[in-house]
Image 1 (tube, helix red, strand yellow):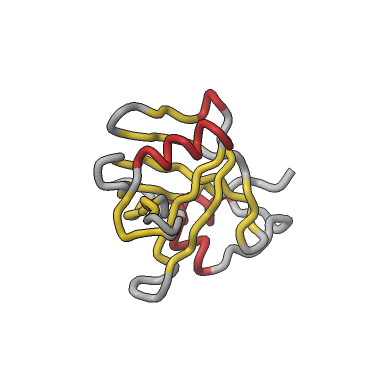
Image 2 (cartoon, helix red, strand yellow):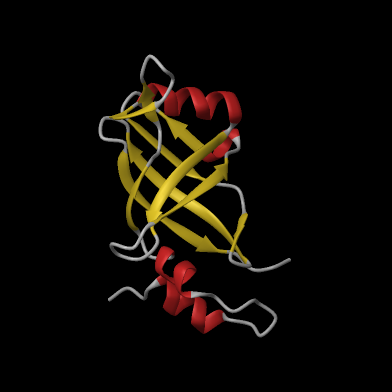
Length: 133
């Protein structure tokens, strides 16, 4: 049926592009993501409770958003900080969608694509591998 993002990358791979490591390869496929925004207690420490208002505040004030991917199934988390431009994200009462600005992960230029449900603070995300300029 549809070809995977990694399959498409391999078919267009140029020798001047850096080798893609296993982490970046895994994150090219859409997967579950979470956001690290939490409510704070009276001592200003993070609690276990998710905070959509904190995500909204952070995005509108800094034009950045953090999302967390599993590094390897059951083996830790990779949290990426994605810069946002006003035309590249949509923030509603229930959902946030964005395509981040280019960042470098393990020597590879990538962009985060994410969709987050603001009720659960979970969603789907993936990386897009970008060609070097």
